[in-house]
Image 1 (tube, helix red, strand yellow):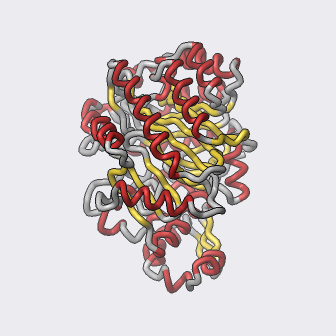
Image 2 (cartoon, rainbow, N blue to C red):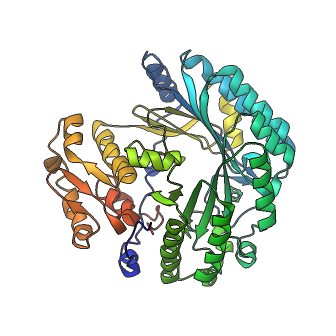
Length: 461
Ligand code: SF4
């Protein structure tokens, strides 16, 4: 069943404006170097003194890649230096051991995620070693949700066996586009048979929860070529599919200038691709669960979306709303209680911090009461496409309409276009409004007006 009656591409085009993706609020540009290692450890100790502290979510950042994809927006580095990668695994183990005594005994790990870069650029032995070190130090919930980003271009059957041994039960693979001309233009040659082979290995090993990532807006993409990619993806039958908008921001990511702007599809073509993607995935039985994400109706994300328990953090949408997130490795982000902290950007700094017995914090922020309230509003809108104003009033002791008086004029255009519905008790984002949910959230962001003066955000559509 289609979730959108008819999608008006002219209207979508109107709302294609720079804006945050709200994997956090406040967003990363607000994080400050005045929040350092000592501040982070103080927050770790303070939150671990709480006997009712929630379960843990551990994120490991593996920044290495074999080759550079020109569209890449991740924190990564290309290297063929295996010794460097080996040493980094050792640093991650040291960081785990350094932080462990500060975390209360008995707190179980409910979620583990390895992201990158390319986690499967580690050797099978390195994968087993890092997972083993985590298990030795932490109490892992038997029902842990353990996910890893994989890249078939570097993988052997032994990698799959190592991921299974390491306890992973969810895999996510970047596909982006199966068309050879597109793959060549972005320097990511990943033939369909290679992708299928590795996914077959994974399924044979019992790794059956599969997410595939696609990107629209890449060079040489057309509606016709992307439809073929979608047909192949639907045939592969993953549980989830993420379809990201390529943000061409060479002023932020220099290597994007290797993509020729004249090869990029026009905004109109991109929107046609987006609309057809939604229709095709809906027709194939996938539900649009939130910004860029589709899932089968029985998948945990879709279920959480229906139950109002979906949450959003640095890994995108998650069902682990209450968990405290600890990030390990360079550029990783930790998030718990009133705090965000991001680690240093280079391996040299990372090693130096660990040598000094310090946390790797590079920047961070402590949330004010206003930040907490706005985060709640923005996250509910991003996850539920609706907001119960009375629930927010009860939780924070405010009068919603008075507190957010400045937000309503910013929502008016969306209301006039039928993308947002306001009533005394609720804000609803029906139909096509779901596709511009970032624009809706932006109305509640207190930092945005100042941030928009600098080109720090990609376009919302
Ligand atoms: S493999 Fe992933 S992280 Fe590495 S360059 Fe390509 S897109 Fe970026």
